[in-house]
Image 1 (tube, helix red, strand yellow):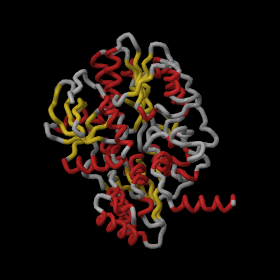
Image 2 (cartoon, chains in turn green, orange):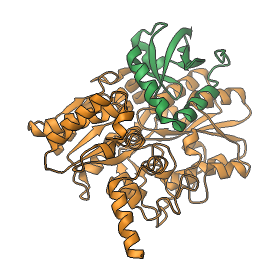
Image 3 (spheres, chains in turn brown, purple):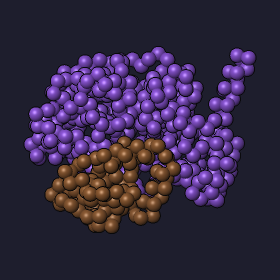
Image 4 (tube, chains in turn cyan, green):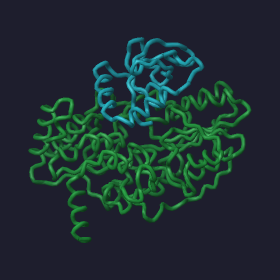
Length: 96
Length: 379
């Protein structure tokens, strides 16, 4: 729950609800970007995701670093990723 | 130096270790890493083996699962057993022991307990099940509290009346102060938490240098980040400085995330006091829902036992959480208390010091000495 997962914004799917489609390790899911409303997020931007919310905007290099160190964590990261994939924040599951 | 070879940039890691060794000289330094994520990195990557013996890391109270006292788990289970309730929780909390078992056991005994990734998942379950009452077991520092707050704002806007939150959110500064006031521990500085700081920024830590005369360096989660932050702490000390510095400026900003802080303040207020496992009651350290959100407050909707339960006698999580003892110095570590059958919270979460040490069981030199002594005594 405390792990920040890097994801790349594909598109803002619902402006009013602050929902966006993100790609995390090749899987697309919906997250909430309301906490980064002041950041003027665009598709292609990278964010760190905590419990279904984008918490900070990061650059591509930091995303790669964060992902590499998460992958080294092994089981803890797999569990977090599994939980993320199971998330159904919106009835639009974001496809796959 | 065996572990350094596994790091992303072994040359840079070796240079940092050499710098740390030179800066430390013959003096002994004890730094506390506040965040459970850092504890995980430190054990996972054998950083304690890489550092010179006179630079010691002690683990702090920054694992939100670990600091939940037994009484609150009992309260959660009692709410979960209410008829019509769907009780939702992060997976990490499912195995945290209360005085009469954990949430997993309550689920096996028939309570409708579901694990969710996000508070928004819990809200979705509420909207999909209007005939049921959905409760979200909210835990975490300022890293996750804004997410719960935003979810509550949504619930209010949408007029969802069957959704409540059992708030166990806590804030990072009060336990730091409690540790600084504790006479058991002599620290030389802190590795400041990474993700929490993306929300709160750097300002809340100013009291550490100004009131307690200790440096704090906010650190990232890579092994190189940790080594770099340690060298920054030592450099400050050797140059006679005592400041807040930010090693993780790639992600953490001085002002934090003002929007997240504003949403937090809109939804939550400080409790007069909150009980922490091992640290006891700390004033103004827990978050509860503001009166405007009373309709969403599970503590107002349900009767909970609200009983304070002492930790099992054998459990030394409190001392581990304060950094007074290392995980392996606990009497039940790895014997009666394992990740499969945890007695204390530190063995439950992957970010708990005991679970991290158990899982990555690379023998620490002090552990080896201690075990060696025990063997001599029993031989």
